[in-house]
Image 1 (tube, rainbow, N blue to C red):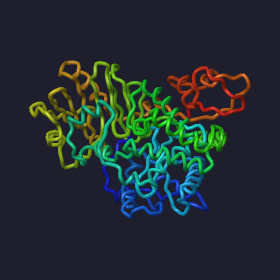
Image 2: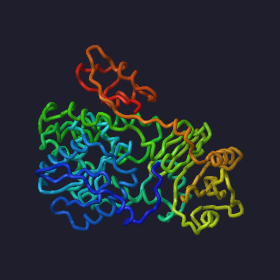
Image 3: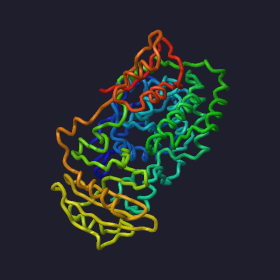
Image 4: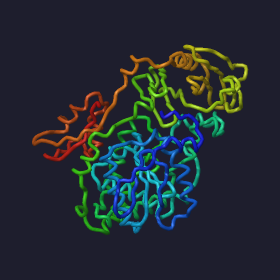
Length: 484
C-alpha cells in the first residue's frame, strides 16, 4: 500500500528529480526515475496532450510508489524504445519511459509521450522481443492517438471496492482511492486494444524483433493470470489488457505477415543479464504483509487482522476478505488538522451512518473515532484515526451486523500501533536471480533454491514461460526468486 499524503501538484513536482536521458543518438528516449516530465512528444501530437502528460506524470509516479532505479534495465529499455520509435516513423521524437516500483504486471501510456512499465512486467518477460512487444503496443496507443480518445470512466475490479464504493462519498479531497481510479490509465476500448496489438506487432517486427513475441507474451499473461487467480489481485495489465483468444489470434496473424516463427531477434540472454538482480514482489517500504500483520516501515505503523482474513496489499489500500464474505479495507485520507475526527466521520461521506453510534476513543495513545452504518445490503463498522499527523480509515463490511463483525473490527483497531524494531524482522525482500542450467538439471533443482517463496514450483514455471514437465535447455538462463 502506497499511502500518500495529499500534496499540491506544485509541491509534488518540486520534490521530483529530473529525467535521466541515457539514449544518445537518434531518437531521444529518457528513462525517468522521478522525472519532471520535461520531454518532447511524438510528431503531430496536440500541445494540449503534452500539458496532460506533464500534469499527470508526477501523480502516476507517486501513486505507484515511485520509480525504480536499475541502470542495466534502464539502458536496455532506452535502446529498445529508440529502435521502436524509428520503426514507428517517429525517429525525431522524444519519449519518456518510466520504470514504476510496483510488482503489478502493468504497462500504459499517457498523452504527451509518456510510457510506463512496472518492474513486475520486467520480471515476467523472458526476452527483449517480449518487452519490445509491450513497448510497441504502448507506442502504438500514442501514435494512434488512443490516449487522447480514452474515456475517463472509473472502474474498480475488487469486490471490496464495489461494496465500499457505495458506502463512501466521491469527494476527491477525502478519498484517495477515488482519485486514483479517475486515472483509468489503461481503460482503452476493445477496438483500440486490437488496433494497438496489430500496429505494435508491425512496429516490433520492423524494428527487427521477433514479431511472434507479442502472441507469446499474451499467452504468458494468460498463464500468469491463472497463477494469480489463486490470490487476490488488483487493477493491472491483466485486467486492462486481457489475453483473450481474439487478441492472440490477431497477434499471430499480424506476425505471419513477417514470416514463420523463428524470424527476428529475441536476445534472451542479453535480456536476462539486464534484469538479473531486480527486486521482486512488493516494496516493503511501501507496506508489506507478514502473515496476519501489515507493516509500513516508512509511515511507522503496524496492525493485524483476525486469522480468518486473507490480506491483500494494493496501491491505494489494504484489503482483507474472510471466507464468509466479510471484508475490510484500510486506506488514507486527507483531513485538515483543524477538523476533528468526530466531525470528519459525520461530515456526510458515510452512507447510512448511525449518528448515535459515533464515539471518540483512544487506543495505544492514538486518537480515533468510530461509528456504525447500514445500507440496504451491508452493515458497516468504520473508524478514522490520526497517527503522525496523517488520518487513516478502517472500514469493515458484512451482510449483517453482529458480534463477529464487531469483534473483528475492535481487535483490528486495538492492534494498530507504532512499529517497533523487532517488527522489522518480519519483513522479507526478494529479487530475481538468473542461473544457467547445467546438463541434467531439472526445474526441481531451481525451485529448491527459492527459499521462503510460496507456490515456488508454479511461480518458477510462469516466470520462465514453462509448463509442468518441460525440459530445461542446458546453458540457457532461467529466473528464480531468492531472498535479498
